[in-house]
Length: 120
Image (cartoon, rainbow, N blue to C red; front, top):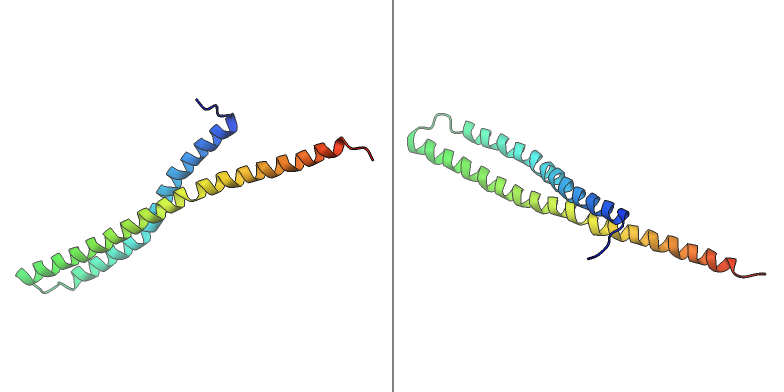
């Protein structure tokens, strides 16, 4: 079993929190604006049905619903992709940045340690 120090455990917990929170936030952000616009368009489409009766009203109402459902399905698909990218892409970049900083700090420290052994 792999032993993880405290910093790596904190990093794993932070990564999981980022993935969950980032996905929820990005998904909500991507859906809220367009879904309100779709709702407004649906209301306008329904308003255009005033004065129609019978089959003409039913067909028009069904068309309004179909357009709204198609638009919402497209937005949900885009929102899922956006949420997944916001949630998943920064995690490996963050881990890579942290390991790069650690490598550079250790590299500089080794340079100072080697310099101590030399006498002018």
